Length: 365
Image 1 (tube, rainbow, N blue to C red):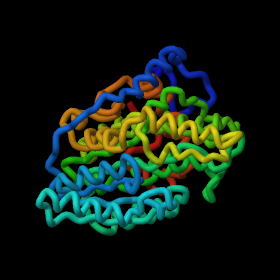
Image 2: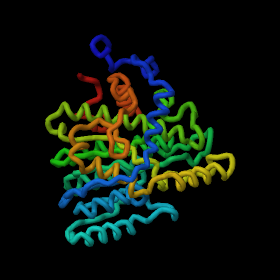
Image 3: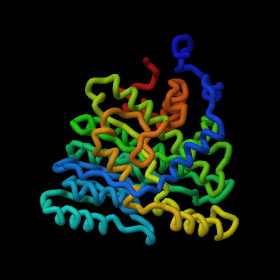
Image 4: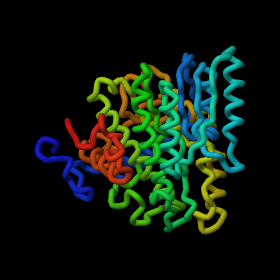
């Protein structure tokens, strides 16, 4: 198709040129995410490296920060000022110090930089603060996210920027942060970008006419928006990797998506207003407590992608915990990837902001 059709002009709602996966395949791939085997990964030497982790005060982000602190990393915890049920970032800063000192590491730095992913101006301020610091960014972990909508079911909750909140927090804000920080990441010899996608990207619905929730197809409590955001993120990062590989100053950067497993974390503190009664949210939390893996086990997906030679051998991939897995077929289709790339530009005005000067907007083989 790429040889006969200008991919840059295909309508967003045009039929895709490949056979869509069957519901059976989607279900089977999604179920692989239930892997609960106890895993270990070797320690790594992160002495002197700088790591920025979004959503690092809670769940797998917090555990990843503690592990990398024990490896000698300097870490910025990019988090909001959290609600009472979450650990405060300043407490995690103290925990990172303890983790480092327990290994005899005394020189590492740990900082909390407040950011609200529901405000694009806050994300841009975070990026500017990093770039102004002059630091080289060795590892960017795009981990912050939310699992349900505060609007409940069959209604949308929009941010002040005009975007459905899950779409913005889970996906758009991380796109914006990543593109702003690329010049700093490119200066690292260990340049990694780790994106927490999910096995739930498989049942995401590819429908760019519903990119921002226009059809109000929320699913239970907004969970369909969660799936959709993870689908688009996995597709987008695959196209980003392809574009990075075309430029000598960026081709060493490795971008991968990861599924941490069904970890018992704050993402499952679903908004009870999303359900017809309190039972729904309580039941979900109970089931995850019963069958989910720990946050520490879930965090291995982040630390493995950030450190291992295997994960660093090539990007644009998807890892189910620490095992590479076949992603949704859309990630292998240039047209499907480009439509998402173009649509994100429509929403965030990336080209107007100068964020596509290197990686570009139009498709070039």
